[in-house]
Length: 203
Ligand code: MG
Image (cartoon, rainbow, N blue to C red; front, side, top):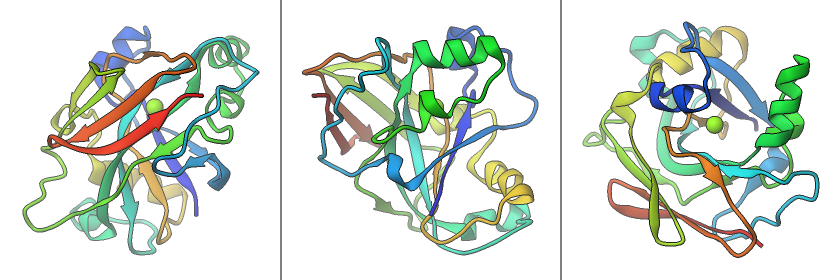
């Protein structure tokens, strides 16, 4: 399996990091080893002094496909949760300055925290989901999937032009504004449509 991530998919977040709005989805990947399973703590990595959370809606792929048309894209995912795209922001800045890839800043072990998946039913409108991240009981991110620059279905269409998507693949769909640093001892909790689906302690 692979973890496909979208960068700069919310205008308010692109703005806070002083990035331009993308005209095509910004895609990067994390390896399987990046997954931090539900209820597991993240151990603060030694190579960064600026570990940041990015809470994102995560969908799970349920069908193999390539060159998927947008109108059929919704057949390719059937579960949703929240995840944290943990980012070593200082390392990312250094890499960006040098024009180098982001993997060491974004794809390290534990960098893809995933919550408990919720089935997508006929009632679920993936493009109309509210989500929040709490850091030590204070809401720090308050997002809504209707504010995505590229919808989930557009992301699938775009990604599948380049990569075959496979059953079990995860897509991190980008973070809204409010990203920030964590420190040892912090507790992160993610709420999807008001229900808690994600819980990560930083140790
Ligand atoms: Mg992200």
